[in-house]
Structure formats: C-alpha cells, structure tokens
Image (cartoon, rainbow, N blue to C red; front, side, top):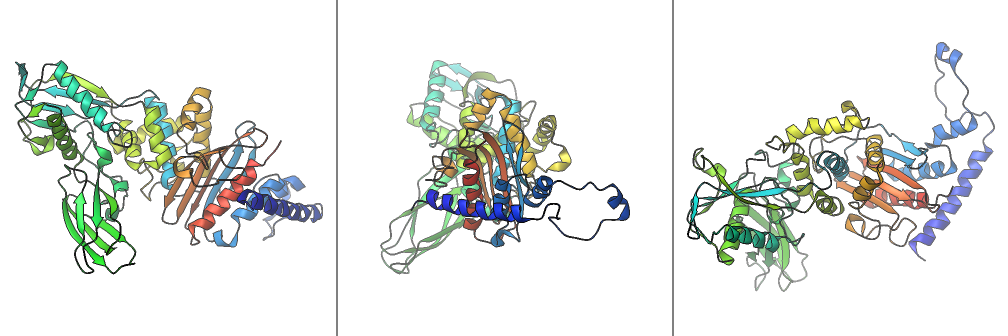
Length: 522
C-alpha cells in the first residue's frame, strides 16, 4: 500500500469523525471554557455564530481546519511552539491559522526573506562583477606592475555551477586580449567592496569549521570550502591517511583520525578556531573501509581565491612572477595610485544564482546576496543591508517590530519571523506573474528536486508543493505555495520551534497537512 493510499484512508476516517463531533455539538453551546469575562465585557459581548465558534476552536471555518488542528495538536507536538498560516492566494480566504503572529526562529526559511528582498532591490537580472585592474603598464606582452582582482562577491565560481574552469578561461582570454602573457608583479586580491565580517551575527563558533558556515567575502572560490579524503591505515590503531583534494587553502591539517577495528562505523569530525589555519580532523575509520570524503570551511576566502587564480593562470600559459596575496596583508599604500581597468567577468544572473540559494539551501549564497543589498555605495555589509531590507519589508506591510533579521541564511538563532510575515512575503512575490515565475523557479519541488527531492513522494502533495525547507536543532520549517486538486493556489508557512519529538514527527504532521490541503476542492 502506498503512502498516498494510507493518507487518503486516514484522512477520510478523521474527516468523518471530526464532522460528526462538530455536528453533534448543541446549537449555541460554547466551544471553549474558561473564567467569565468582566461585567463590562459581558455587556458588549456578541454571541458568535456556530461557524465562528468552530473557527475559533479549529483555527479556521471548515472541517479541513479541524483536521489540520488535529494534526498540529498531536501529543508529540504539544510542548512545541508552532506558527502556522494557510491562505488562498486566489481568494484571500484564511484556511487555517495557529499562532500566526508568534515570532519564531525560521532556520533556512530566512532565505525566503533574503531571496525576496534581494529580487526586489537588485532585480532578477543582477550579476556579480569581478574586475581586473593594474597599477602598472603593459610592455611587449609583459605587465610591469601588479595584477589586481577586485571582487564583487560572485559566489558562483565553483564546480557545482560548472563555472570554475569557465571563469579561469575567461580571465585568461581577457588578459591575452589586453596583450598580457606575463605578470611581473604580484596577484593582489582586493576584497574591499565587502566588509571584513566574514560570519553572520549569532553564528555558533563551533560551527565555523564546517562548510555550511563558510566565511563570506568579496572574492569567493569553490564555495569557500575544501575537500579532503580520509583513508584507513593498514591495521587497527594506525593513524589514518588524509589527502586534501582542493589546493590553495593554506589550511594545515592536524590529523587525529585513527584506524579502528573492522566493522566500526566511520565517524569523522572537524574543528578549527576562527582566524586559525589549523584544521583538526578527528575520529575513526575501520580497517578495510572505503575512503570517505569530507568538507571544511577555509579561513581566508581572499587568499584561497588568489592562490587558485594564480595556479589557473600558470596552467593557461600566463606566468605570474610575484606572489598571490590578500590586499589586507599589504601595507596601506602598497597598491595606491591610479589603476587601469583591464576588464570584468560577470556572474550568472540572480535568477540562476537564486536556484542554488533556495533549492540547495546554500548558506554562502544567501549571505552574499544579503550583503549585496548594500554594494552601492558599499562596502557591502550585513549591518548596512538590514535597514534596506526593512524598507522593502515595510513596503509589503511588515513592520520592524514583527521580526528580527540577524543574517541572510538562517544559521543564526537570533533571527525571528512569524508565519504571517512569511505569508505576506510570499504574497508580495506573487503579485506580479513574471516575478512569481522567477521566484517560484527557485523553490524546491516536493518529490522532485532540491531539499524536497525525497519528501512527499507518491502523495498528492508531490510536484504541487513548491516550498523552502529549514532545519536547525529543534527548529523545522516549510513555507511556500501549493496547488490544490481543483487548481486553487494556496500560500502557507509552517514553522515549529522547541520540539522534543523526533524531527520525523514534525515532518509527518506538516506533510500530512500539505497532503490534505492538496486534496482541497472548491
């Protein structure tokens, strides 16, 4: 029996039971109990209709709302704080609500805020720019002076986007077109279009070694992360072998991985203090086990970038005689004076970058887009971008006191949103059909792709739910759009905080609710 069939039968029984319960209530009988209101309140109190009483009890005016109430009111979720809102995008009808104005931690649902505001302020055609300049002159194929690369934050120079080799090819072609086949000076990475705050406000310090917490900068390569492979030794007790497969990070591997007895599960972890090059790799891997690959965040994105660029140019026949260096490691006046522009390399448009940002839930992309709000006049920073985001949210009817923006990705636990806020943003994106098409194209699709590729398969919700996921410890969120069986478009936000139940229990309630909503007919 498929999951879809089980869900249909269960919902049918639940619907009949709830219908009978609602119908059996005496007409005019109170739905909830509690202390009597003060006399002044009793004097002006209006007796609610049966439909209104059901709406107050179930979060909405229909049996469907009662069914959703049963799902979100399951005992396993009782200690949790849930903020839920479901509305019809076509009619404006509120289908279900549960604490819709409560402020909760959104996890990666914060990326909905970042993507929407980024699209509104930057435009879907916005492209990040990497500029190449020099403080020297070109003579007979030689650049007498420094080659300066001035970053604009492009996050897409990586293998995921298949842009690594294409970017380096484009740079080499650009230099040759300017008559440069040899650089006699240094390769200088100028990252001053972004501020030096590499991590988001409120990020946990012990997460900073992991690739999902990679630092943000104006020059970014390979998602600011390295890969390394761990291979067991020949016998239990030996130190395992670690090989870094991404060059140029300047990280120093401190190997504390031991070879364990056959059959022992592989358990590898990393740790690194901020501003330290020492990447400590700890754990065990069983003798005879297959090698395993892990990732880790680099310490200095700018240095990582120029190291990679220097090697790529050398491989393409353009010699760089000087060292590759971060401009911040040079004296203040080392590259002063007039610069001559050599050319620019542009990123793909925001519409393409947004698909990785949202479907993959790529934190580095989100932080970059958030900072890019303040690229003009710059330097781009989270502090300068927050008031700009507030201006846009205010134009959508969302007041500053109704949320708090700490970062762009949702890694911070001091972001606060509400289901009402997220639904308003999703509605704002849907006002213009072209804007909606571009925004919707960034969202994961249930059972099909992105972070929803393995969820809701074989159910009525598959393919019709387009939504952004979110996960932190004891935080789970899912918000987006849904098309019902009758073609009605719904907008929803479902955010759970502080639950002690397994994540599967929260996901089960949310997915069952979406399956039931997908069956809705009008």
